[in-house]
Length: 272
Image (cartoon, rainbow, N blue to C red; front, top):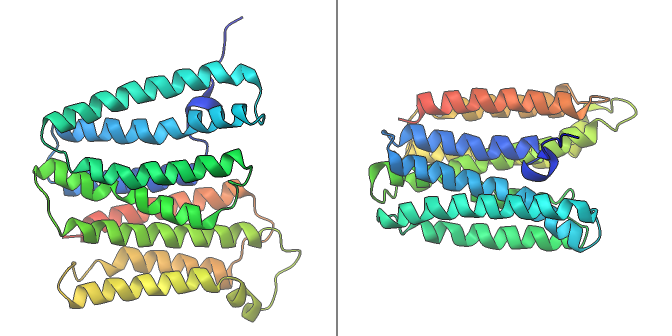
């Protein structure tokens, strides 16, 4: 009998993680100004690290008895495959002089260890703090891609990282709000909706304030508020005016995918 591809073991299953990983990487590659073999190596290394989390998670689950032993072999094969590919890409980058990337890998390893410890303790679900920190790690792909493309350290790229981390943080908190809304039996008064979604609204308007302050300080484009205003409008609309009562998680996820795509396009057009 032909064996099916074990995508549940070898590929990340969280759609939100795909968006929060690919968007900063794509933005960094585009804003880097040029693509070369080093950019390709960075992309391969980042993808290998992103993909490796899934089989590592399965290995830990097998170890603590949460998954059957039959998952051990494909999970171990996935870790070895992604590890070998990622190591080859990293060695290429180091040989090309991009040693500063090792500093960016340190927080990623620490957060991965934190996540795997939660998996072993059966406590990895609905960990907003972990998700927010992990979003910051994934946003590091943007400045890394800029530095590799330009072949040098550019301090201004930290603004790129910080703003993309803020955007991902807003998206994470907002998704938590939307997933909780879907369990409501009825639509509550608007005051209760605001009270329930206060954290998403706070993150949203704080981010807009940061973008405005960066604009006044001459650090970013005067038009960069547009993609963040789009996200803010979505958060206000979904939190106060159109809660996701009774909606399926798939519908919520697809809407967020659309907002992420629009944000990414507007960000690239307004960054300079």
